[in-house]
Image 1 (cartoon, one colour):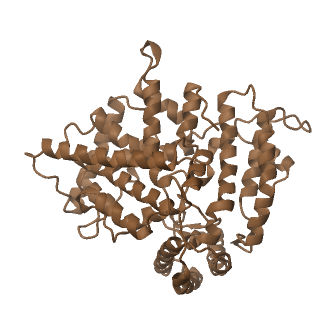
Image 2 (tube, rainbow, N blue to C red):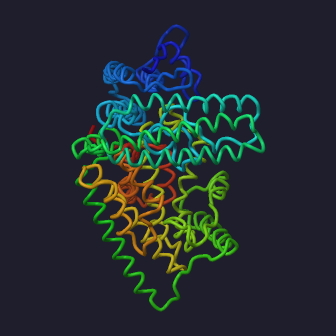
Image 3 (cartoon, rainbow, N blue to C red):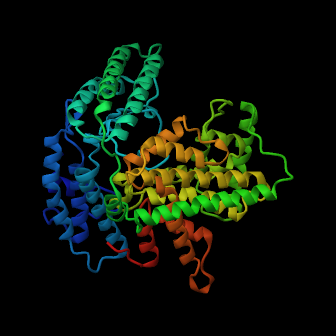
Length: 541
């Protein structure tokens, strides 16, 4: 059960937040918006599980208590009168409502703590390129990418406590996991095999520099091995579906991620995108038929040269073509995420792409611009300052990163790199294929094995390996988080609708740079709400 922050404490926290005027002492909230901000702080504290001896409490009793108390928070939110508020504040109200709907959906339908063994993965190796981790996330996970070894004593002590909690977390998981979702069980076994491997690797990293932590790491790894064996033993008894079904999927899209589409709408769009991208690929291949093929970089040195050249070209293009406002922190943020050379035989989809045309991932690297902006110039609204819960940001985050690929190609980035255009169309085809697979899983029409085979088969040139970690990891995420697999292309489509609308501004006032800056100013929120802020057209609740 999550503990509730007293209203007085919540108001104090908000009064100290930048951009939020403090109410006079003892006066209480000065208006309805301050009531919203106070409730938002209370809600965020309520949403977190209670942590006992380092173990977050996801027991049936704790979840039942959250479910019992959530309607009271929702009723208080609904009672706040937003009449006469400016659109930006009404958007904040809608965001808090969406987050509460997210917990409601988790409690009623998704129930990751009871259905998904991968929910109990406590070790995270690398930073996500999105505002927060994709998919349902357990409280208190160890984010290794935040640590530089050897650790100072206080940080080492905190890490030791979290490592020591892993066996207790997995013991609670055995009691909590009562669901019958077979595909989630299958990918959960894969996840916990990876967790054990991560811990084994961590032990080797620590042995020469911080050996006192190694016994705790090894005990955690042993607990992971035992937990995976327990999952494998129970797998034959798991026979039920893992998707949420079309009706629940539609509710989730509309009321949590605020996407004005249905399962059927998204399937139609994804099928159209798959056909469109494959057709354009064929046309590009025909146009380029006299050109030599685009061979992958054969050595680390050649790969580095191509990547550096592509990076410089991309940043120069953004500035000279006035695509968007390039701030000082954007270039280093993207440069730090250029990746590394992957030799032949070990490549999967994105390393196959990057070995041939590095500009695709530089465009998709708009994610790193977003994160740099969130860190250096946080949104003035406390509701939007940090990442929204339940991946509610996905249509904006993944939609814009994907849109930048085709938009920049159309704007001329690849005019001198015709074979590179082929790679960009392959990228769109891959996203459409994996989204179709995810939709079919959520509707309980396909198993995850069928989804994996489809996504691999429909991605051109065989670059998405059916036995690779990429396709399995993607389909696992899309099964765990409804709406995520389609967000790349649905978000792109919604942004294109908005771009078309804003381009019709009277008096020739539209510029692409102005549009991009306008979208960025709204923060990492659903595209439907960005449209409301920028056009005044309110989406249906």
